[in-house]
Length: 176
Image (cartoon, rainbow, N blue to C red; front, side):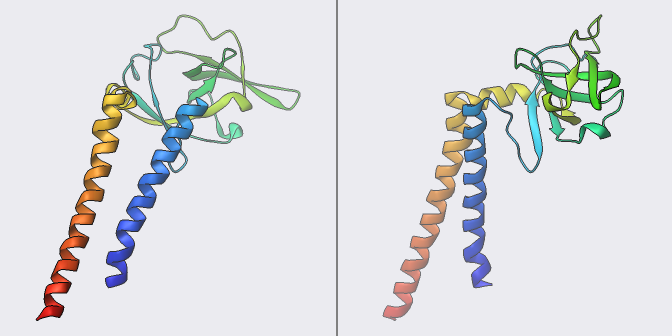
C-alpha cells in the first residue's frame, strides 16, 4: 500500500509531463497533437455543416487507407499543407495507389485535387460541439497560465505541503 501511495504521484507527474511535451511538440512542428493515437482538431470553417461547424472539436484516429470507404470523414493536408476535414465522395484505384476525392458537406463542388494515402491524418471518430473555443483560448498565454501552469503549480504545492506535514508528524512521533 505504501508503494502505491509513492508511485501514484510520480505516475501523475510523468503523465502531465508527457502531455505537456506532446503539446509543445505539436505547436512547434505544426502537426496535430496525438494522445494515445487520437488527434483532437479544432474546426475552423463551416464547410461540414450540419455535421459539425466552426468551433467544434473533432477527434480523429489514424487508419489504414485501405480501410476507408466512401462517406467517411477524413482529415488531410491539401496542396498548401493546410489541414482540411471533408467527406470522401469517391475512391479511385490508379496504378496500385488509392486516390480519394473529397467534398465539404456544405460546399457546392468536390475538392479539385485528389488526396493520396500519405496526405491523410486520420478518420473522424466523433466530435464535441463548441469545445474548440475553449481549446483556442487555452493555446493563448492566459489560457496556458489558467489551465496548465496554475493547476500544475497547485498540485506540486499540495504534494509538498502533504510531505512537510508528514515529516513534522514523524518528527513529533519520534520525540515522544
